[in-house]
Image (cartoon, rainbow, N blue to C red; front, side, top):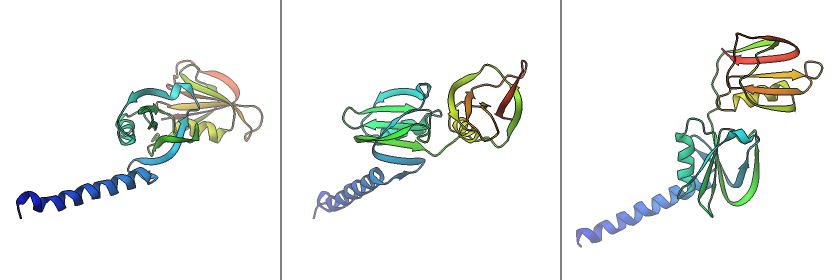
Length: 190
């Protein structure tokens, strides 16, 4: 038996092993740094969360592009046209919509801040990333935590501490000009 003939079964075994591992990774909902949703596309909550679009060969390249981009939290790959869409939001903010031929990846890396300061009835104007009406304090705070470049949030409550209000997530908090505003709760990473 020649050397070429003896290596053929080994080569076949390696290829078959790769196919099994690849198939498992593609169909398994958990991938190293996040979670994969097969046959779902991501619809972002905010237009400001869209990072960009690129053409790649497979969903694994799209996932890799998201993992390597420090601002990316979610990516969607379209298997038909091989487009990869990158977003700064987590899937908890937008919607996962059933769609054959789409693969969506969600990173596991939310914003890490170990010391959130809280202020009441004081506004830090300017520096807003986005805003949303009709959510509660917890939703406002979580929205900031899950949005890249958010360093703080403020919510003006309609009435009472558990009511809903208008939330503003911020990319910077300035301290040189403060405005007194009733029923406002502000958080920032300190």
